[in-house]
Amino acid sequence: MDLALSAQDEAFRADVRRFLDEKLTPDLREAGKKTGGVLSDPPATTKWHKALYEKGWIAPAWPKEYGGPGWSEMQRYIFSSECARAHAPLLPNFGTRMCGPVLMKFGSPDQKAFYLPRILSGDDYWCQGYSEPGSGSDLASLQMKAVRDGDHYVLNGTKLWTTHAHFANRMFCLVRTAQTAKPQEGITFLLLETSTPGFEVRPIITLAGDHEVNQCFFDNVRVPVANRVGEEGQGWTIAKYLLEFERGNAYAAALQAKLAAVREAARTERSDGAALADDEDFKRKLAETDIELQGLMVTEHRVMSQLAQGQNPGPASSLLKARGTEMSQRITELGIEALAFYIAPFEPEARKQGANVKPVAPAHGLVMMPQYLNSRAATIYGGSSEVQRNIMAKLILGI
Ligand SMILES: Cc1cc2nc3c(=O)[nH]c(=O)nc-3n(C[C@H](O)[C@H](O)[C@H](O)COP(=O)(O)OP(=O)(O)OC[C@H]3O[C@@H](n4cnc5c(N)ncnc54)[C@H](O)[C@@H]3O)c2cc1C
Image 1 (cartoon, protein in one colour):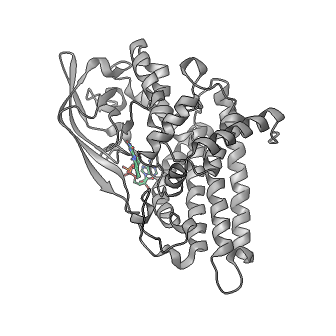
Image 2: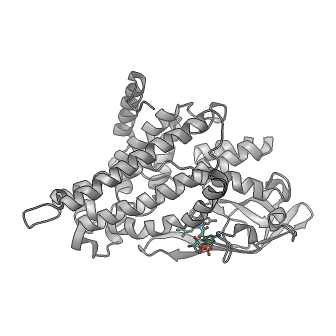
Image 3: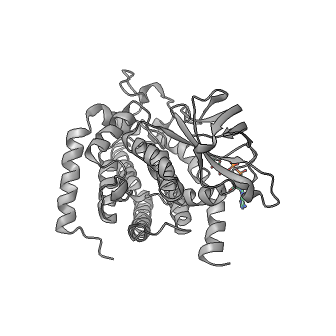
């Protein structure tokens, strides 16, 4: 595979850089730089979403007919690399990467016409209601009940670890509509508004001190049958399709930017005359990580070219998910090594956008510890590494 940029791609990159220079205002860059977790928070994400929407760049992977920009896989890669390099806020992707593709494939014409434009414009903020206490890896065991009552379903139960439910006005979720011998067959996929009476969100604070995840409670929440995607009992098929997109993320571009930050930290951190960046052992670790990142990037290109030909990512998405998140953890570990004793201060206030608290850690170190702590969860959410390896063993290696 020739990874050198063509003249056309070089011109595209220049275009993207011009756009980022103009639209990525200092407050947005600050929000991006201070993000210790997977996603940045509103209002920065709302503002950045709007800027990308107005440019027609908010859903890089969507087909043109639904409002995508019609980019090649290389253009998409360039775009995400440049956004990472420029510290753009990390946008939630529950609408564009998860619910959107599901609606395109399984949604009714009315659902597509209503929801897809709202995902693009940012009018709706989605969250994902899959996991429950005791039903994460074993998702098919989920118990949240949806009982039919006329033209509504009545929902009772709970969803756990729901990322950004406290910002979301809509949730796509899996519910149990029947107790079947095969648990997968009794699952249905529903869309709901978080303002529906009986729906409650309670925060869970992460190790890094952030409010990212929640537990959601449902007490007789009434959801119109018209909000069902696909048929009753088809939820498992839809859920699996969605998970391929959730796991088939491109990690390499953002990880390269993180590795660059680690290099930078290693050049400046030590005061005993020799920087950590000159240490042979650390240099070897950086080089090994860099080489593995190149491997990940090539694999991502391969999967993205399948997507460009209209295929879905398939089980290769498990490979990307496992490798991408494990590499993310490794890079944050190198960051901790480079940052040395500056990892100690716990400074969530200094990470707030517009904060006037002077951080103890150097600017580049402010998020390294939160990112390290946050990335511990990366090999769990979206399906744990062990579960991804089971999928690879079964569907890729055939064992
Ligand atoms: C930060 C964070 C954000 C999340 N966001 C969301 C969200 O927005 N929406 C949502 O629906 N869910 C979300 N989740 C939930 C996530 O998908 C689950 O945590 C995940 O699927 C693991 O399930 P579990 O927590 O129940 O762990 P368990 O399934 O109980 O797993 C515990 C351990 O057992 C191992 N294990 C389980 N089964 C097997 C097996 N068959 N073979 C080998 N090992 C196995 C696992 O690898 C893990 O190490 C989030 C989780 C986290 C931590």
